[in-house]
Length: 274
Length: 274
View 1 (tube, rainbow over the protein chains, first blue to last red):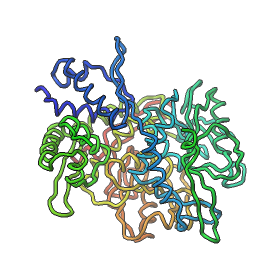
View 2: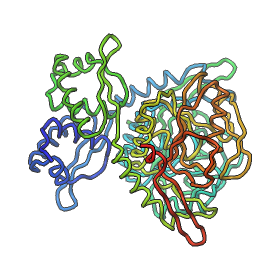
View 3: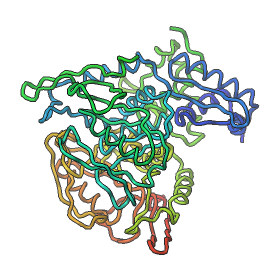
View 4: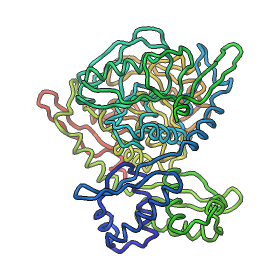
């Protein structure tokens, strides 16, 4: 194997950090891979560290000792998150998106790779200081959001099912009142999906009264586990009193009129708190 | 704004390419951003182009003219895909994963960010030469696979629902015979989810007889659209004659015995064809 030149080392380090956020790497790993001294790798990392910080892309943290190493923590500046969300709102708050029942069609955005990547980045920023073992969501539309967030936070996604499937083995179920369907529903989680005493961040696409989020919290309790954060892409302004507290929303649907086809969306609580 | 040094330009180009695969960028965009001459950007790109090719990470292609520009096409060497799949098989083919009914528990892997990233990369490689407008999957477990693939192929994901939801607007439904539930089921797709005359790659986690994939092909026909490729993570060896042809699998479940708790998994058809 030949020595890597600095430009190649910088490219490879950037690629590895971007593709493996929050993953610990030993300096030895890089020095062996690049066939250069550890001191050269340290210099490369310092260049990247300064550069990432300068651009507001995140931190490269180094810890000493036997278990030490270097890792990249993606960050996002709030002004960038806000600009992205305002652009998203301008796409969402259009009459063509108003659906029967006063809902807003958002499914297309949740399938757009660049949208979902940015959304994951924003939620990862929102929960960057939270110590969690997993991201919990409920099928179906929460899944892309949970997955995108997990790619930045580097913790697994666990999906709550609306019915129990043969391919999940033994499941635990709870009943909950869904705001959107206005009826009692069941959600279930595979016994083997999570252990006990876990800390979960709950994410979903939409929150009306918070019944689904409340159901997920109850489900977590069945696994002696707790919810350490809730994030939704869009909340409805009404009802004002939700069944859960301490959640963040990125956007708030303040008005939607099916007849007049008017819709009004504001920035959500995440942008108020900061 | 200050001029970017070469090491910073290399870092930023790598980051932009990795985070925006198959996206066209004008040289002018980079030269303005970096405050350097286009010729310097060209040199940087040549360094990256050689490096990415050398490492088997993908191609950086440059096209001339007014609509021209530079884009990064992620690739993966077959030997790397194979090594990754063999490692995956060793995790899957264990007695603890055998479920009642002769199924294999795979849900945990589909929530692991590093697994799902690699899986997306392998499917993107499998369909790298396919000209498609979208990735189509059916809820629930196909979604993370579709999303991961979309992040590399840079085309949107469309999710077929097993029931029709109020938040989707008008939907088109077809009935199909599911191999796993052994009964007639319904799948539906929102009218506004896809236009007409589209080309879709279908991905899913599991294929038994191919009934679900066949249902999705029928659904596409309702939109005057066609299936241009099918990929599944795991197929069952039996039944040998599937309802669809021209699909690829990454792994093949050749034996699973619920009583003896034995399971046997081989490399799938993708690795035979190449």
